[in-house]
Image (cartoon, rainbow, N blue to C red):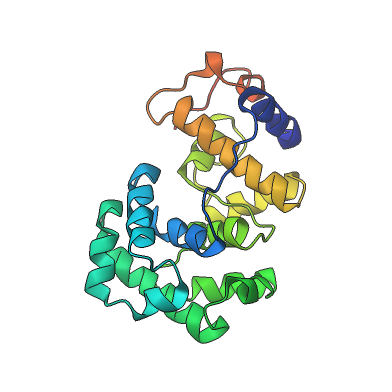
Amino acid sequence: MPDLRAAFKAMLDHFGPQHWWPGDSSLEIAIGAILTQNTSWQNVTKALDNLKGRDVMDAHALDRLPLAELAELIRPAGYFRLKAKRLKNFLRWLVDRFDGSMDAMAAVGLSTLREELLSINGIGPETADSILLYAVGKPTFVVDAYTHRIAVRHGWIDPEAGYDELKEYFEGLLPGDVATLNEMHALIVNVGKRLCRPREALCGDCPLKPFLPEHGPVEL
């Protein structure tokens, strides 16, 4: 069983705190979590800037905004028509359920809130957990492609492991506080982007090198 706490410390010592997820409000973070599906954060930032420039970074204002206008504002994020519909689904739920208040949303228990988020058309596990962890401070771990790639290459999990299995694996071996779960995911993303790339593992410069199997990284 790997020492994920030691792996966490190694990454933190190497990269320092990641200060993720960026955003001026919990609503902006939640919107960013939806917009970042299948695109880069740079593109998401442009879309968020458009919303702030239009002065509609408010649940009620966005809910009232015509779908076509919302889609045009978030065009830089890609798949803008589809994402506009997903945003509208989330915003309608937020307004109907909590009168648009992210604070009221945050007062609901983790399991109930996660179940409700997953019931919204267009909100999958990764997006739901990102909203829960980063926007409303719930102790849940976010699994993404970086998590899977790094865990497989280090022999921590079976290559066929699904989202829930990976999530339970990491949550079972890490402290359950929001700060650690937040930082761990952000550090894994950094390793995945810089070093543990899809077609090339730059293990020589990686803080996770000591945690590889003796024979080296597992092939994907």
